[in-house]
Image 1 (cartoon, helix red, strand yellow):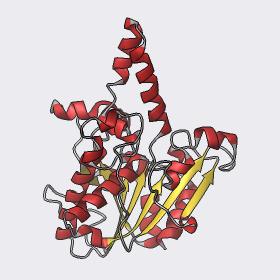
Image 2 (image 1 turned 120 degrees about the vertical axis):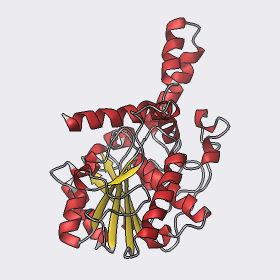
Image 3 (image 1 turned 30 degrees about the vertical axis):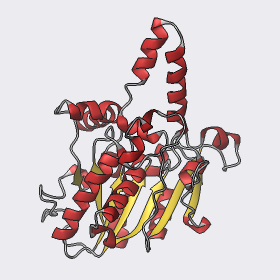
Image 4 (image 1 turned 180 degrees about the horizontal axis):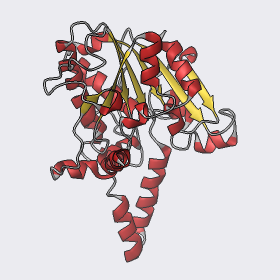
Amino acid sequence: MQHLIERAVAALNGVIGDTLAEQQSPLALKMALVGDGGAAACDDDGALVGDSEAAGRERLCLFVHGNCDCDRTWWQRDVAYGARLREELGVAPLYLRYNSGLHISTNGQQLSALLEAVARSHGALSELTLVGHSMGGLVIRSACYYATLHGLTWVERVRRVVFLGVPHDGAHLERLGRLATLVLSLVPNLTTRVIALSGERRSAGIKDLRHGYLLDEEWAGGGDERLLPSARQHVPLLDGVDYYAGLATLGADEAHWLARLFGDGAVHPASARGDRWLGRGLELPSDNVRVFPKTSHLGLVYSEPVYEQLRSWMS
């Protein structure tokens, strides 16, 4: 029962989390680091608690979930990536719990501050791996940007970043949703306009997914309402860090019609690869990109082939 409640609250945060936060609702999730089982992994000052798996470990791996999801999605699985990495590579897993309805840039800045507190209190930390699924990968990129901007030290511990189904070029489903809402709002009919108004109630986080916005200035001034990504800026990757991308397709390969039309069901392969139809993409080396055929968007977080590839990248 508890896991159903946690998932329901996480989904609610994804849809209207910005409103919940503005209203100071007790349902609004606060950002936190947790370990396997959901136990708190650090105190209010960012220090890793003594009985957590991560305390005293030199190598940490942080997993960041996507929109409407929760930390439980990583560790309550038959194929639990974090537990396997701990057993096989000696890497301690941490999981981020956060309100995915807030702007990606807001969560990015909060994560950056949290990781700085961890780095300052955890002198043994020498290697940090960041793994982001869907929106989680965008939150990671935003956190790295703001850490560099403010001269924070935690980014010096980052050795690799792994993106799993991350919509770097935006999520086509959100773009279609925005287009449908725009069309409905133009129809001179009370019913359709009410539907359009309901569509506009999407959270700030969901709206950011439309174009993969990472920064405050991209959505400020109405940028999150635009159909085209005219406000988007180029956000460079960290120097000296290895980046990898895992992308899924519903079809047998990227050329399959299912993959071309629907990608993994939520994110198109080109977006997950880091390509951009407007502006400069990530330009990841082809050897650092892996396609997982006949896999759904959510399947990327509990797939044996995905874990084996993650383990290989971390070895």
